[in-house]
Each structure stands twice: as C-alpha cells, then as structure tokens.
Length: 390
Image 1 (spheres, one colour):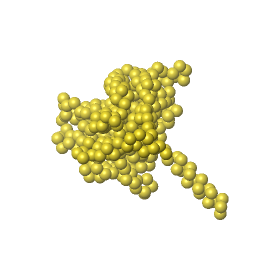
Image 2 (cartoon, one colour; image 1 turned 180 degrees about the horizontal axis):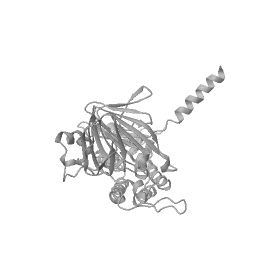
Image 3 (tube, rainbow, N blue to C red; image 1 turned 135 degrees about the vertical axis):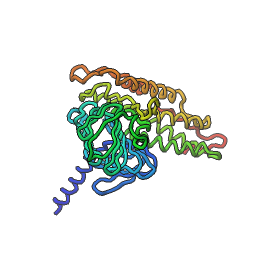
Image 4 (cartoon, rainbow, N blue to C red; image 1 turned 90 degrees about the horizontal axis):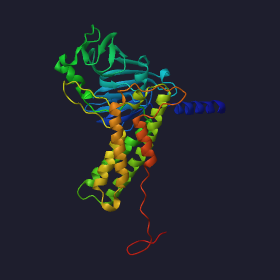
C-alpha cells in the first residue's frame, strides 16, 4: 500500500514537472479563462499557458498570446482556441511541432521560429476547415460553418486551396474556396477580422516565457500604482509604493533581456536563421493605404512605464534617470533593428564557429553589461525628527 501511495506521488510530481509553460498572456482586455483536463482557471495579463489548454475569451474582451518560439495568437471576443500540442525543441527546431484549433470566434495567427523554420510542423484547424501554414500572418473568423480568412503575409492553404499575401476568402467550409483580393471582400467579411488584424502585436522573437510573464505582470502592477500615485490627494506612501513597483519593473527588464538574448542564440544554434529568430514586428492591415499599429516590444513597454512613473514621483523618490534613459535608448535601437531584421537571409547555426550576434542580440548584450540596479539611498540614524537605528 505504501509503495503504491509513493508511486502515485511520484507520478503526480512527474506530471507537474512536465507542465512546462508554452506561452503567456501578453495583453488582455475583458475576461477570459483557460481549461485543462476539465479544470478551468481565470486568466489575466502574464498568465501562463500550457500545451493542452483551451482558451476562452468572453464577450467584449480580447487576448494576445505569445508562445516560447515567438508565435503570436490574437483572439477576439467570444472566441475559443485550443492549444492541442505545442512542442518547441530548442536543440533542434526541425523536430518541433504545433497543433492548434480555433473552435469558435476569431483569431489572428503569426508564425514564430517553428513556422519560419519548418512550415509543415504546424497543423491548424478552424471549425471543420484545415489550414496549411506556409510561413504566415493570417486572420480568420468562423461562425458555425461560415468563415472569413485573410492573409496579411505569406501563404496558406484552406481545404487544400492556396491563398497568398493580400488575398482572402469567405463562404462556407462545405463549399469550394474562392480566393479573391482582400479589398474586394464584402465589408461585413472585412469587419469580421478587422479587430484582430488591426491590433498591435509584439515582435515574433523567441522568449523566456516565465521571464516575460513576470515582466508584463510587473508592468501591469506598476501602471495601476502609478495611476493611484498621480491622482489628486495621493499620499507619499502611495508614491513610494509606485516607485518600488517601478524598480521591480527595471529588475524584470534586465532578467527579460537576458532570457531573450539566450532564447535568440539558442534558436539560431538549433537551426533557425538569424532573421527568423530576431523576429521583426508584424505590419498588416485590411484597409488599403492604412498604416496599422506595430506593437512595442515587452521591453519598450516596460521602459515606458518606468519613465511615466518617474515623471510623477517627488524629487526624493525619483529613480536613476541615466539608467532609465540608457534602457530607453537600447529598447528603441532594438525596435529599429527588428524592423530590418527579416530583410536579410540570416545565418544557420553550423555547430562550428557560431553566427555573429544579430544587431538586437548586441543591443541586449550592451545593456546587460552597462546596467546596474539603482543604488538605495543611505540610511541615517538619529538626528532631529529621526528615530535611532535599532
């Protein structure tokens, strides 16, 4: 009996150890949840997601999910999405595989390192339709058997019919697919996917999921505390709490930069090109001539938060402005480099002399070498109006 009991405990511990986070909630509005094996949990910004999760976004909400390999999924309201399988092999990208399904509602999907390295490794379904990925940025909405799909970049096959950049299709999954230019789709069809297509998304570089989760949670907390500290009548204690939260964001930025740099290097060494691993921000839209928003990196969002908080703090609680500006410059340079990262062909990891760092990697290395945590103010003891040190 004891042996059986110990065996069950070992099995439970092993299963918990294998529950490695595959993705995190990068951005979220409204409410949503994730269910695994029939057990549901409420999601918030920074929430971790695993292979096997079924994600639900309630009415009026939206959710942006970023995976370990940089893959992006944007879900609109009243959507259900299943991560049926997510296996990112960081030692050999070619052995990675992804299986996912849009059960209802609408989504945008942008490939990361896996899709950019081995397109056939991604299996996707939308309702009864089968989608073949060809290195892609696509949006799809389904309502029963009716669907709308647009391809912002790359190509897909929808029920074996090819659809290329700038094309879309609408109809019923049981009927033949007829690709047409996106701009000729009915207005209602374009409206069905517009919310996800026009939404700003983060870059598609691989990440350390746990570090990214910690960072976006720290940013959300600091943003809320900053709003309180900025309100009329805010107390010194509230401002001090906002300053502490900003310092926590700074610490999270450094940890995230280090994890990102390691993830990018690992991806290149595992067979991804430098261009694919660096992950330029996605740019797309359904309106001709429009300039859709390009999402800021998690690092830039965090730096902006720290700057905003620092602006409202009293002089005796302000953070180190030099270090903040230094991080800001590095984040901006990183974003500029990402914009041109995918123009070149990049280098494959050879196992011999490793590829040179990409521009983004070098920026990360620079900031890690130069950044030092803020020095706390000296503690004084005794004196007028002060308590003696204990």
